[in-house]
Image (cartoon, rainbow, N blue to C red; front, top):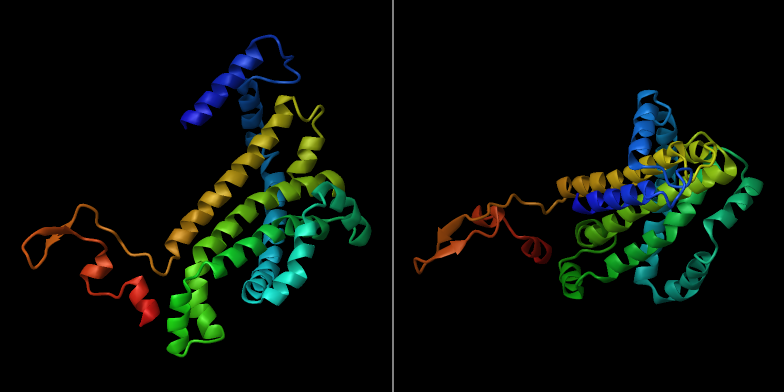
Length: 276
């Protein structure tokens, strides 16, 4: 909140200083008024929904492909040597250069824009998958193997839960990148999203009508990771309710802090579940 207030104050000072024309830098008030008008007339709701849908579809496609590929690379040095150089080289091609090629190969519409989002999100998701799998404690994996875990049981019970925070962080960042990919795709390939709203507002970079869609896009990109963080927290299989400042006496009569409610109730801890 404090940072946002500072940015708005600096913006207001620059816009009212008279050194920058209003056509290049409108005041926050004028942008806010135009944004409220657009929201009241629902001229931004439809394009925002279209852009979000394109970004979600692209991120889902990238996730379905990147997670298995990242798992393969994490478990095989041969696969890493064969695939990783090509994956890294693909990141040298900017999204703006890929968009015209997708138009030629696929055409216009939802599919090429979703593919562009997938290509932008794909490599970060592969990296997060490799990092998450290789970051698992080898001792835990060995203990699970001694207990008979292998194949899908190893993935489902050990590797997926332990790599889950890193994987979800990569997916969360990928969702943010996919918004940018959707807007870039709309610039080149057309559509009915926020990219077309911005490009149709002359001059799109400076007028209040052009700044509003950018603020809307930033708001969507910022809200989606926050929503995913909440989903990640609520779906955490090892999430236990914590009671702060609650203490219990030990054998010596001293007061000791209560670490978790699960420990007090006699439930197994996370490490005990993995090693048991």
